[in-house]
Every structure is written in structure tokens, then in C-alpha cells.
Image (cartoon, rainbow, N blue to C red):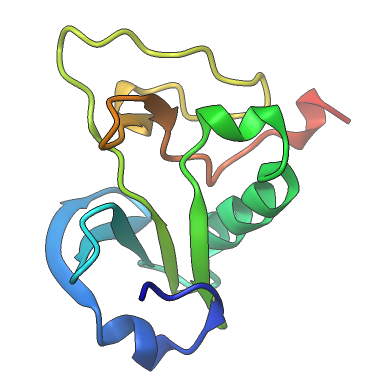
Length: 133
């Protein structure tokens, strides 16, 4: 069974799989035993991107907006690790979806395709709250 909610780092490290890719603030790993999930490991404390995605997901999870965002399932207590829905890189032929104005990462790599071939936002760890406040 996959980890969920707030978890201890050692529990996440026990399921840390192979490295998938690396960005400027995080490294993405496979989740051993759960092909539909990934683990995002923050590179630099205080791991704001992981906390931000966790907070945003907790606010939109029960709304229709959740359909366009990768789901978050667990966060380590320090924020070092975030367990999230696996969204593989878009193909060259894939069209990007419209993102909310408050998301700041408009790169193609910020979106991905899940196992059901649904395109979603997979990197929403940096936001511009001034655009909505």
C-alpha cells in the first residue's frame, strides 16, 4: 500500500526507486512498487516547492480544479519528499493544457501525461499569489 498523509523520511526512503529526472530544485524518483506514483526530493531546504504543492493540492483536491493537477498523496514531515501522481513527459505532438494564472512555470516540462493519457500540471511548486490576491 502506498504511503499517504504526513510521513517519516525513512518510510519514503524505503520505497525510493530509480532516478527519473532532475530539475533546478528537485529530483524525481520512481516509487518502488507503485508505477502510478513518483517521489520528488527537494534539493535545498526548506523545500518550499514540495510544501507549496502539498498545500495547493490540499485546497483543490475536492474541487473540479483537481482534474488538471497532479495529485499529491504524501509529504515527509520535513518537506524533503513529496509523493505525487506520476505524470510522464509530454510528447512533441501533445498540446499543453491551460494553466491557472497564478502558476508561474509555463514550460512544457511542467505538464505531463498520466497512465490514463490525461494531461495535467505536474510542477506547481512556484506560484504568484499576487495574481489572485
